[in-house]
Amino acid sequence: MIIELSVALVAIAFAILVFFLIKTLQSAKQSLDKVSQTLVEVQKTMDELTYEVKTTVRHANEITADVQNKIQKIDPVIDSVKNLGEVMNELTLTVKQVSVTVIERYRKSHELREKRKGVSIKEAPLTPAEERTVNSYDAVNNEKAPGKIATVLKSVDVAATLWKKFRH
Image 1 (cartoon, rainbow, N blue to C red):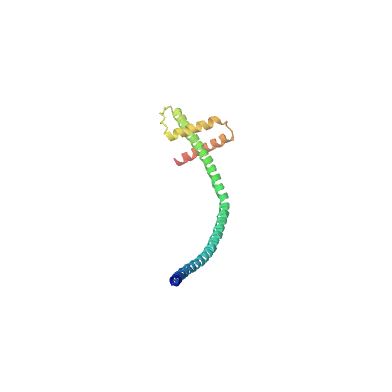
Image 2 (cartoon, rainbow, N blue to C red; image 1 turned 90 degrees about the horizontal axis):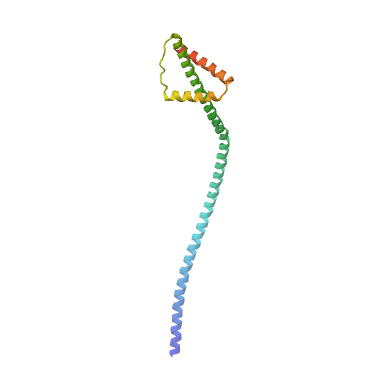
């Protein structure tokens, strides 16, 4: 009778074990179903994002090509501005040289007129800007031999002197 009772007890224990095992497996199946559903949703989201990323990359490539094209069109303008700056520097140097020449001519002619009149004049001290102008003029003119440039500068001096007289 002990054997029959033991077999019955083992059968009941096995039935309880099977019952809980079935519950656990059903719970695991539900979890796996939810995971599977989540993976499907993630896959859909990834597909949508992939499409959007590809579209964004295409637009970025188009914008980059457009910017490169516009930069290539602007390059000649930048070169022109650079050349204009160089020309302006040369023009400024020329105007500076002419102004120094005009100042010197004016002073010399003024001194000569005063000497002819017999009156000695006291020369006004130069301002720092005038002194720099005179010094730069002397440096430039002492280095170059007289030629066409000197003739042009003399003509400009005469024109500036006439303009000055006309203004007064």
